[in-house]
Length: 458
Ligand code: UDX
Image (cartoon, protein in one colour):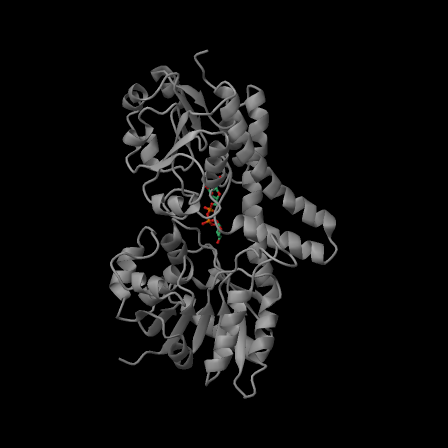
């Protein structure tokens, strides 16, 4: 079969995989190939056991794979054959040299640019999908145009706003699609080609365009604003716990102001995920680079409050459990950074687990999807840790349960049965405020929500 266009995506991760699967699903006229340097990852994408869990993803991959969606390791051949190349390689926080702990590590991204330059034999549109520091497209253009041939590469920025756990829904029905291009005739032409792909399923008015730098910056700022909302509400939980206020009531009252809005005001043990911290630190680094220290300090505060919130959770556990956790058995309900994903990157549970081990507690970790990642994250940690899939078995004989992830199953457990199986006095620290606190108290638990007065029997 001949296809109208050949699309390639370099990087088969949480963004590249689902995004390309959806493009293939919505656009049977295009051939879509995803490549990655990791052959094991590609083999998984070609198997029944996909490398990531995402509701609805299995069905879409099944419907399209080997029809117009392909996963391959043949990067050289695929670059040659493609018209449009999405770059979706990871850009973790740099952990060495200048900007260590803050700036983005661009080594994978630059290798990819060099690979494209080396193998390309015809004009191509290059689409930045990875979240990158502002002005990266310019660097990409420079690398690509340094080849000694007359191949033209037009670099577009098309940041991905999908959230994990709702990736397919977010891709199918996005709030907006943002495409940044140069305002030259060839830039605008390339932009229109990308608009045409999305227009296969996204209403035109939701496909917005801008210059390249605005597009790159918008992604960082969107994530900084979202994270700021969580840090704002989390900062108030500390005050609520000292007074008689209840954060759920405060968040409801504040969020009903239509200028504020009700989403992303759920108090928690802290935000996690691969994006928020990384993107804010990138923004902070950028501001410092331009000498804007006040602006940098302002945004850095969002990350500081998040660290404070996690540490506060531990200090609350310590003080509630008579100032010692040594030898106590604590069950973590959930390890992923949020529900409906097995991803644990930057999960607050990692910090909490490490701190509990420092306090010499014994840990039992349960999670419906993230136990394998939890084992990797805590590999080498010196302490007693076990991993148990069944939450009833996991919590048996424990002194306390700490809810780390808002998995729906936890709200619907038989807590009378759990209470009976636990050591007494039994404690619950609800880091997500998903449980029925009054009912737990009536069963006999000592209950410590986030941002609400504790309910204790002593
Ligand atoms: C985020 C952005 O939402 C997405 O647009 C961007 O492309 C990537 O970063 P993601 O990290 O997948 O997506 O998850 P998100 O749903 O935003 O949650 C991030 C963290 O904040 C999670 O740990 C979540 O539990 C926490 N959170 C979220 C809260 O603690 N309270 C809230 O009210 C909302």
